[in-house]
Amino acid sequence: MEYKDPADSLNIDVFFKVEGYACLYKSYGKTVDAIVENDITMTFVRDSKTSGLFAYFQEHGYQVSNPFKGIYYITGNILFPAQIVVTKELKPELHIWLRALSGKLEKQDLQNLLEHIWQLTGKMDREYAEAVLEVAFRANIQILKEWMEMLI
Image (cartoon, rainbow, N blue to C red; front, side):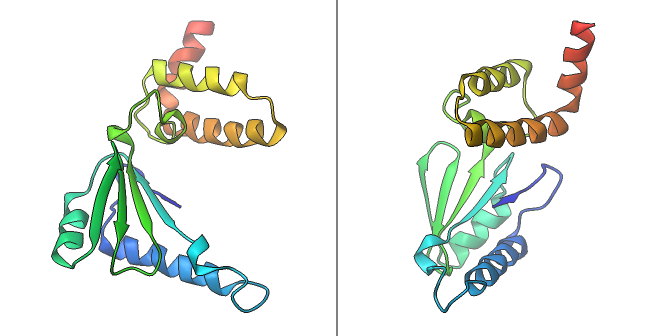
């Protein structure tokens, strides 16, 4: 998974870099073919759609489908299936966890995330949720500061 800050570039070179990481991951199995090729996918998360990358895909014969708002599947000239998640396009009520990784949360988005976390009961679920919450707070420090001021 590659999370891109809105200020970071997501271009074909970044795409190939992640594909290279996926190849390295495949090769690190304890035995030959211990990590099965069909079990590997690449996921990119970014705030907005990068038109240059999608133009490259079209020009070079990649297949791009958009089965859900904000989620694009890439297949074709690649070793592993890939998806690009555009957080700005996601429906807030359906993708609260992915939207939380964005640096552009509204107070209500953060409130919804906290409500979802409070409903979790499993130990691992809560630990994963806390990790997402930590990233969300760091990415949205201004909202956190505003909340702190309201509490004081």
